[in-house]
Length: 226
Image 1 (tube, rainbow, N blue to C red):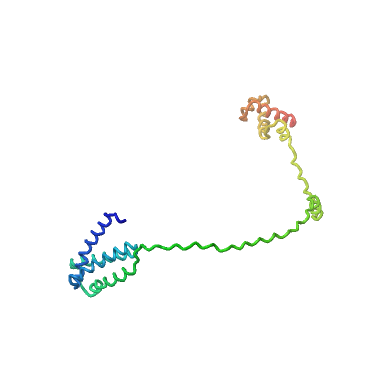
Image 2: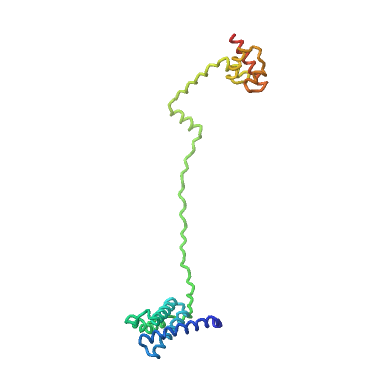
């Protein structure tokens, strides 16, 4: 934005702060004071151009960081001024010249292409579905009859004989009690003939009414056996 003063103030301050280190590095590798001043100018122009074009921004900022770091290392005596360093500093101006002229200013407008007509779509009529001959259905009664005539005759399984019903089972069903309770009651009657239904119910752990039914069944069994 044209009226963003804080942005431009930060840009100018950063360029001035880095320009001194770039100038000192150029002087350290043998540039005179006039040529050495062109090194920070070239890097600053390249950086501004890259930011406006929104291209090579990372490369421009990395170049400034590398030159500043090398300058301070030389000043601190941690980096010797040798052939690779001199060649690298001397290559800054040609590289900046190449990159600045290869960058666009980022303000070119794209000419919209005229809308193209969509290609004509060929619509083909779908073929008619083939006619399917539906077979005449045979009534299920005829099919079932014909199927049974084709099957071999299978004899029906003989019915299993029902188990023989004992007297205890008979009276248990009759009085709706359990056969084992009748057997227990018969054994108690053999000891105590005058046992009541209530006493038998208490002995079996059942109610009085149920005990009387068991007692009646047991007395009938007792009469059959006697």
